[in-house]
Image 1: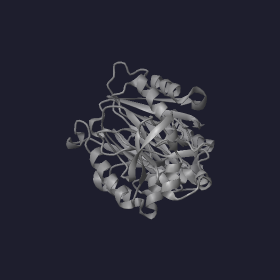
Image 2 (image 1 turned 180 degrees about the vertical axis):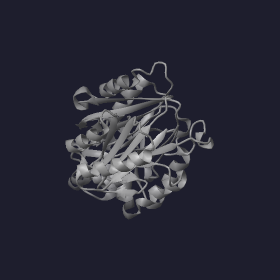
Image 3 (image 1 turned 45 degrees about the vertical axis):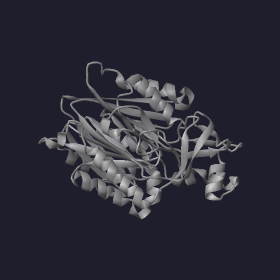
Image 4 (image 1 turned 90 degrees about the vertical axis):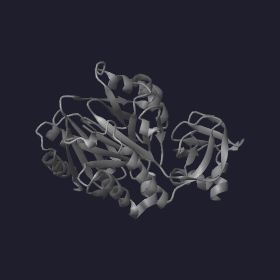
Length: 399
């Protein structure tokens, strides 16, 4: 496996593509390009970007998405473009696919469709893991994952990211070959002789006593402790309902709802998208009636400690290929935009922790997301994948 990464902060998309591809191609050290992964700041998200990429890459499969900021070995940039080019040996397999019109089809059905397309042609090949990118403003990302796992199997690890913009919550974009998409999801299914390690952590801590979801349906909480759900935020933050409705998206990125998961070290976090007329909370993922929850808060210290734990988990590659000579690996980082908001000027410290953990020469690219997808029991690489907020997911791929 050969890997090449290129970065550009040029304002002109055509010039940015040219600069990033020149660097990525040089670092790849191979004439054959099998796959391209592209992340960019929202201001680069345009048809012109994909046209410029297609001129140079031709029919090479391409996936990626928009981000509030991009991550690479060279740093974290609010405006820019990062490209990873991959060249595989004959014993590595992958398939890419895309599903459109998720709101019309429903998240569950869209997930089933994407899973079926990704699984096509893998009947006699060992499946390793899947990577999925989705529109960051889809309500039911949990349903999308559930549908995919119905078709691909619940023991197949799925790791992914929801695209983001610059905290405006207006429109996010996916890149799939020559298409610029919203209301869509795209994925890569990997197989053959690949190994991987996965680390997922958030570091947010609970505020006060646990509460019980006494009435909910899908991704909407109607009552907490038999009272209108929004009262949880009114009481803890001393804000009236009008103030909360206006700022709830930003508020919940710093103060999400934590769902207790039995036998797990950390709970699952959920951001709030809106507050209903009756005081209901519409979440960015499903929640089960009867769940034990807490309002959560993060600190810079707890956030960075979680990153260190995620790195240590991700370093535990299946089959320990890093112990063998000649094995190359690359890192994909799916980092919550909430962490970027919390850390601010200290955000580069997360990147330094990652580079220190994997070595400064290991290729790293990533993005800031409106949601992350990964199994909870990352070390076992088994079981249900969940939709997360406020987490950092680190995928270490070796081959």
